Image 1 (tube, rainbow over the protein chains, first blue to last red):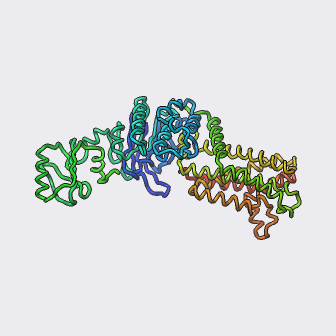
Image 2 (tube, rainbow over the protein chains, first blue to last red; image 1 turned 90 degrees about the horizontal axis):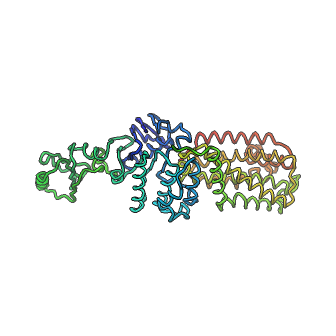
Image 3 (cartoon, chains in turn green, purple; image 1 turned 90 degrees about the vertical axis):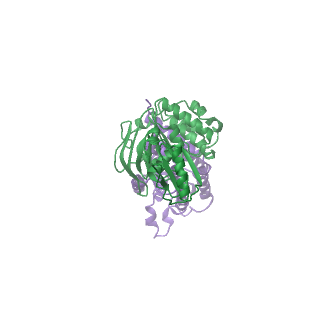
Length: 303
Length: 247
């Protein structure tokens, strides 16, 4: 449905933001762009939406070049911008009716307003709404044209837990209706809960992509494993291998051990701590998460 | 499959929306209606315009109509666009079927709609104060108002699209005051010192003020002033196309 070749783009200050993003998204799927702040997620979306013309590479949205495309293509695509993109002095419902007027067959505004709980603040000017309320209005504005493709830039930013579950449920429902949804997030949890397919972006490049199970199972130290043990201790201790598994210091003072872990590994690890006179300040063991994958490949924390 | 509403409907909707936004904004009403009315009354009750040949009100009314154009096209529209750009409204609307060209057409409709209201209110007040416009120049005046709107809208968009909204606010308000006081709008530049006069004739504000005075006092179409207004429109539009940042 949409293919970003090795896309390159410069920002307003002519800094190279994207340098080889590959991305493809399909109808009926949620595709997540995951990466730390400043990785180039929003710039990637701007290229895909046609708001920005990349310096190189190819972008196709529903088979067309979004930068050249006209109202016909734009009516099939809904966009929720990170900053919301909402006029501040207007009230939510008149704004949504105005946006709905741009389409031949918009969604029913009243239903959308009820579904997203916008009724509760329908008569408050947008500038006085909370971040989560603004976010819901922006989502409604992206949906009002009944799009086939939906771009959501950081959809869960500023949402309280309750609006978050309302928004997530709606995203899942839209996916089952066959919409192609492309969202960005720097929250692992969002990607793990929502995404069918994840592109991990770092420093303007796609560094890894796959389904969530593929990414958490098949990469990093100890390929094919499903458990990860991390612990924190003083930096720079040469633990080497423990019962056949290598201890990696991912960031100074944080060590990880990935593999088909058994009680024997824990025993050997405790022996290694004793040998180096180390008492870890924190120990954590869990199935590998996207966060671990990201840490493995970039050496950076996501947040 | 989703489809866009027809182009004319999208543009008219956006025009109505932006017109209402301008009319609902208190500061914009102040600069679009109240201050021009005060200027009109002030010029009629004081002897400021007595050095010229025509009567006070006949000289004041065309100038105040020119000032109204600057209020709406440059200051009002510029500030609104600047803040819409800050909040991402321009980006969002350009992803809808409205698009970038629809947005700009909507702004032009809004400027012309607000100016229609201004002409009715300020022109009506001037008639009550005894204004006798030259009937033969009304059509010429209408053309000149549209040319003035084009020049100042392009300038307003250029400023709003290149600097921060706070700077747009400051610059367009300051320009309004400077142009009103010394930009050939209310007071013909013939009354200014000789060194300033040739420069002042090149200003879009002088061109618009002179053009409206030629039309409404002498029933003449001021060709030179029209050319100057067109030149400003072309230059500012080209600069805006080149440098306008949507976000």
